Amino acid sequence: MKNIYKKTSFLFLFVLSISRIFGQASPSTTTVQPKIMVIPYVGEGEDLRTVLENDVNKRIAITKVKEIFDSKGFTTVDFVAKLKSAKDNNVFTSDNQTDVKDQIVQMSGADIYVQTEVNEVSSNSGNSLSVVISAYEASTGNSLSNKVGQSGKFYTDDFGKLASKAVEGVSEEFINTMQNKFTDIVNNGKSINIDISFAQSSNFKISSEVAPENLPLSDQIEMWMEKNAYKNNYHIQGTTDKRMILDDVKIPLKDANGKNYNPNKFALEIFKFFKTLNMQTDKDIKGNTIYITIK
Image 1 (tube, rainbow, N blue to C red):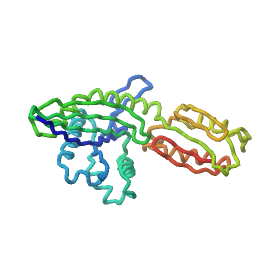
Image 2: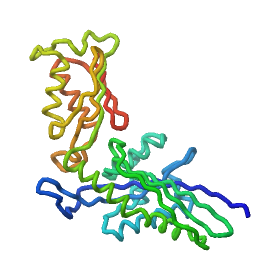
Image 3: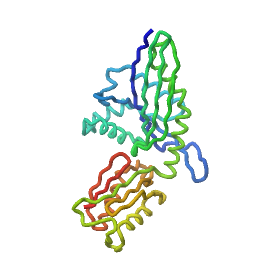
Image 4: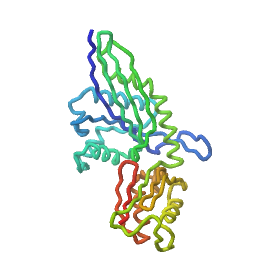
C-alpha cells in the first residue's frame, strides 16, 4: 500500500531568561532555568503573523510542546499573546520574515530559539511523526543543541499525541545539552565575531599610528578588547593591513540592569571607541557578526 507523506515544520523558540537559580555546579558557576516560548516555523510564502490562523495542527503541536516544558518546571511564554501584543503596538516594521521573527524575539526577551521540523508519515500500518530540533542562541545564532526524535507508529490521527511522543523521546537529552551550553554562556559570555575593514577612500590602515597614544591601530584595538570583552576573552583570527578579524569575542548575556545584551549594544561601544580615536566608521550587524568599516 502506498504511503502518504505529509510534511509540517515548526520553529520552537525557547526564550531563556535568568528567572530562577536552581543549582550551582561550583562556587563560580551559576546554573539558571530557562523561560520558554514556542513559535511556528514559516515556510516559503508563509507569514509568521498569520500562519497559525487556519492550521489547527500547528496550534495543537505548539500547545503540546509547550505542555512538555511546563511539566518539566520551565516557565513558558505564550506566543499567540506576544504576537497579538506586537500587532496591537505596531511593532512590525517589515514584511521580511527574518525581521518579523527577530522583532518577536527581541520584544519577548528571548535568549534561545529552537527550530524544529516535524515530518508526518501516514500509512495502513499506522501513522508516525519525526522531529528534528535545533537550538540556537537568539542574538548570535550560535548552535546549542540538536536532536532527532521519533514517535513510533500508532493507529491514531491525533497529531498532538504523535508530536508529544516524538518530542518526549528526546526532550531530556536535548534540554540537558542546551542547558549546559546556556550555563556556560551565563558564566563565560556568548561568542560573536567582529570584522574590521577600511573603505576604499580611507586614509587609514591597520598599522597606522593614531592618537591619542600614537600606537598602531591594531594594538589599540587589542588593548580595547582586553578591557571590554567579557572576562577579557577574545581571539584574533587574522590581521592584514586592510582588515582585522576577531572570531571569538565574548560578550555578557545580560547588561548591568539585567536586560539582554546583544551584538548591537557591543557594536555601539566599538563605534564610540573609534570616535575617541577621531575615526569615522560605519557599523552593520548580521547574526553574530559585527562589521566595522573605517572611513
